Length: 125
Image 1 (cartoon, one colour):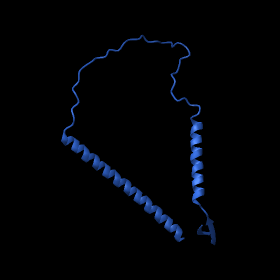
Image 2 (cartoon, helix red, strand yellow):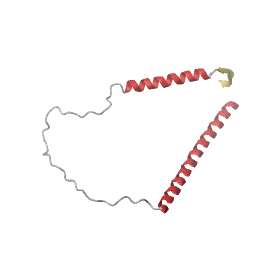
Image 3 (cartoon, one colour):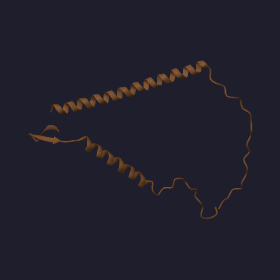
């Protein structure tokens, strides 16, 4: 049982909040089940494949069918990149991963610090 005190219009009041893990898990299960049910009902009438639109009548203007020519040419075979280029790709991708990881870590740290400071200030009131 958690006990929280708060000031309401100058009077000191007490509010009792009871949250059990079983109730929280049951509510989360209901929400997940209802979300799946909503997705099923939302997609119930939709076709799995797109069907071609069949015209109701013959089109007014019909183009003459003309075959398209295709040219067959030879190309050079695949050439693997050199070791210097592969090393540069590995270094560059590692650097990008480190920078993105640092940005994500800083964002999470600031968010966590803000949440802890806010909740601590609420408990001190």
